[in-house]
Image 1: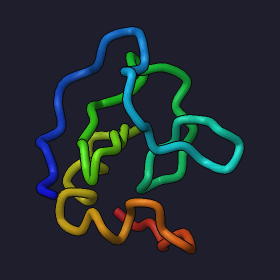
Image 2 (image 1 turned 60 degrees about the horizontal axis):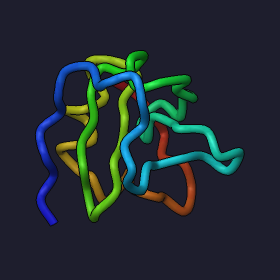
Image 3 (image 1 turned 90 degrees about the horizontal axis):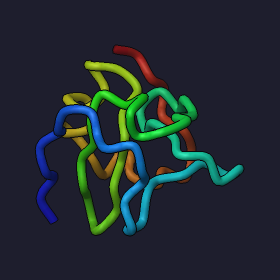
Length: 82
């Protein structure tokens, strides 16, 4: 499934769709593994394989777009260097 382009900041409520979360259940940036408190604290999102991934900083959407399979639900956390 293709990756949708990151969008500007989201609305104040999480969407009614699957969202990438960490083991604690917090919404998490898949690149930096930073917990994200609310959609208005993100720099955007991308949808991949019917799941929404939110990002903590401007570099994360591009990193994800280059290789989403690496960051989408990884078995082990990849080293994050950007």
